[in-house]
Image (spheres, rainbow over the protein chains, first blue to last red):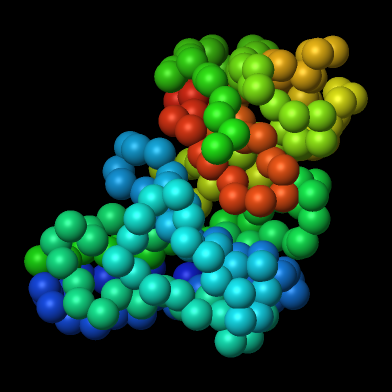
Length: 114
Length: 108
């Protein structure tokens, strides 16, 4: 069952547009993550959060920004989309812990910038 | 970053057991070992995790070496629906780094 939701599932947009990818979870998890994945390639962590008002950059530099105003919501924004941003974006969440809490992933947003 | 090493791909026949290996030679004593799998066009899904002891759940078994430098994910009877990319990850409760994983192909 899906307890973490990403919208839209697919998005095709022109260069220069501002976009926001939505991610919501209903499990009350404190930790949330955004990963970027090109087809057939590894997942790269671009942002994560330990809770409300906490955001950190991941190990892959990204021009996107995130916010965490509510526990359940972790949107990702691109101020000006470019073709190089074309990729799949995966949101995940987990409980706070020392490695004993599995990640729950959404089904991703596949972004195409033309 | 914590890094693991896995074979790029493996093949299995349907209905046979599959042993997916993972090396994590630099793992610290408190890092958990997690396995996830990613089916085509989906986000990764959790499979199993453990610290020191072997673990079993409805999806798979996890065998952890005594020195914790390697582990093996065991699918007891592979089905076509098990064809996916399997990721082995060290989890210290911080950022999680995914490697390339093992692409499992299941032949009917």
